[in-house]
Length: 256
Image 1 (tube, rainbow, N blue to C red):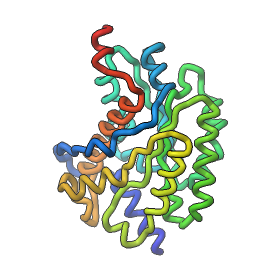
Image 2: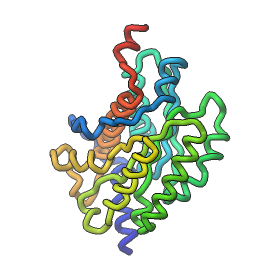
Image 3: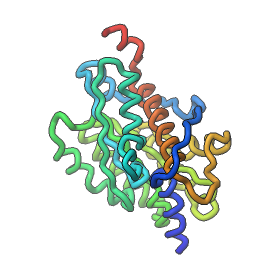
């Protein structure tokens, strides 16, 4: 019963169904949460040489939004729109592969075939892997979680793509019921070993909550808040990706 309550709490915010619309706050992210020493060479080459950037988001149900506006309001869609604005003259395509209720191990097992079956013009330069929530809910042993991350990242890098991890989303009520720190810490360690960045969604959303940008304490979250959070995450992800690519967007505009 506890696992079911936590699952509903965790999945509900970013996958909310429609209610009322709300205006978007500034949702500023401290620079240190979006700065990374890791680089995206495949992304950089795609931007500079091919002028075409393909991104694949592999995630759970919280990568999507329900309702008529859900597809265009989800964070992958907002990421695509923001990158198109930032990277002048570059065609940006963001696809999603939803794997709801899958542990990291279950998701990682299909990464090789997933990349192989895509047409050449759709093969990703960057895979964004959102994971950890289901493992935390199921209390998967952190050593097993770490092994799954190693396997998944290794398979993706072998396929010739850059990789970015996204950790769990933050919910203040969830923290009283679920131990998330071991999973976030494990993701951070594994990312360092593979020299890839982690988009620290947990810390970013906690910052927004503490700054009063979003009321994450409420018992229910409507489509308006979920839409705003997705927009903020999409824009923040865009900033980190451009940062890791080491590409100067201003130079792209000059080249045009």
